[in-house]
Image (cartoon, rainbow over all chains, first blue to last red; front, top):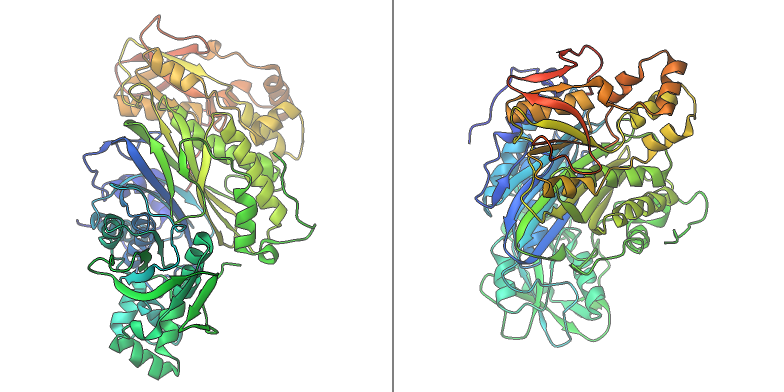
Length: 318
Length: 318
């Protein structure tokens, strides 16, 4: 898809709300299930009877992204990935998304167009359409996304893990945290980690595959691995023990850890935003693409190698 | 529903993200169609096959509301009403909403709770549930809402009006603009208009009734009556003429106009945010609860009494 271009220096205020909306909408191809796309009071979708899965997230400049650390396209990819991943974590696949964009009048119009392009490209990875949106003035850039999806089997909740089951992970873990650590020190390499921070690559096929394999509980790692394992443990009323030697430490994480004097395992256990998935299965049921990294027991909380973990476990917003 | 209270002076930062989320979720009763409500990676809804209607809006403090002009509960009512009305304007009824709330750490936690109470109470008017949300730090208060609904007959678009049909309106019109004019001058009366600005009362039954009566096009008046009639005319490829004597001018609008030296008709024709509905029908098909206020002809644009209208027609965001 080609991004329309506007003259350099053209701001949102210059191009105007309605002019920009037309240009943005042109970047969003509509799937066959979309009877009415953007432009009316509401979008109209044709859905089959069954489970509709819905998730929403708000991204705020300075809090969730920095325009000097990531391109507009990257921010678009991340904003979409974060929401597509929530649907993935239920064992579903998103088919429709909405975007609310709040931005100062002096935001370059080109930024909004490139953001939309990145967003649309990420949605295309799972065949989802951007069916509606809203554009308004705000003092900082805020991005509100809602994703709607479908499950072909029963959705997998956070609450179904039982003692005796095993915990497994799908997707990269610690890469985004490594990239953030690099950027935070003013570096741009290892490039693969910086790219992982800018554009996470959630394992979109792994959610439905886990559901099909009988996963008993599942969660998207977005706050941090230990923190999110803790949410799963709390909602299921179980204890989880992680086996640190089960995590393969990729070479670039060794490099970052060496350069920053930190422990690569801390990036893996504390890192979020790769949108990897954690799920529990009966022993022997872990499907291809998933790696067994722990076990479910009686009790509560998360331990690492049987002991309390005292490293950083994730983040809170307040 | 009782609003939980927190000690005076308690901020969002004091109470923490997860503590506040628990208190908020307790304010949102879940309908029978909600299989999984807030708290998992995504909500899960059971829907019948058919048309799913989706709309999203972003409200920004200072732009769409002022905390000194409206209570937190009022802002909650308005934020919900605005989105419920978009579903109404398709001839549908919302069943599920999500909320994203971005706010500074020093926002009183009580504000968020009262906002949620107002939001939930407005949703209850149509039987809709708040099924998910997100809470994050932002420099200003931003509220992102997505509404999901169903139509029992074919959705009514903006694009179906044809020459020879009539234009009708349902709901109050100009009241919110009157309230805003009052507040803008530092007054608090006529109280009924100020209340109309703070808590619009969209005609939720009128949308489905219009669809059932065979409405050919419909739109929610949110930008301004002439502006939104213009959107309907443009999307349908027709001209619309409004008959100024068809609008009953309520007494409080006369009072505001007299006090501010303005024309009450200007408040009606330029006002938005009452979330009245405009729809077109075949002559003789206008259902109860709707008032005929104009006609559809060949051509383009909106006229008032056959002439160009040179008053304020609505608002743009940039």
